[in-house]
Image (cartoon, rainbow, N blue to C red; front, top):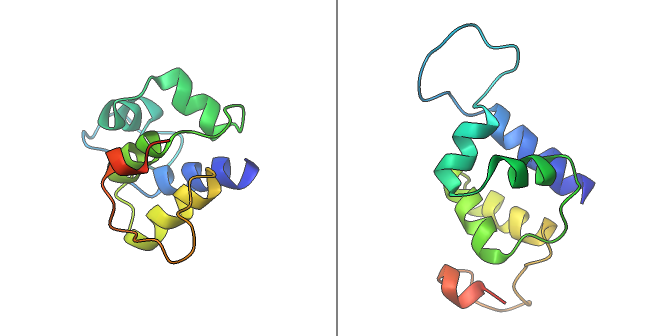
Length: 101
């Protein structure tokens, strides 16, 4: 889960904040902003980024992929790191409902 946590932090750090505000200590969007975009609690996103949450569902991964503006390849990486990778040969153009388990 350390790779998942590090990837989530890196993807969040590259996002441009939606609202300019006072000088930020860290690059990218705040956790609160990403959590709101993904429809997740800040606490859960924090646990994911710290490697303290295990195996987020495919639906959570899809929401994070949208909020983090991931490319299709990065989305696949996110699903794989979270343990939600599709079996070899399976279609990658599945809906989030079809991916849930």
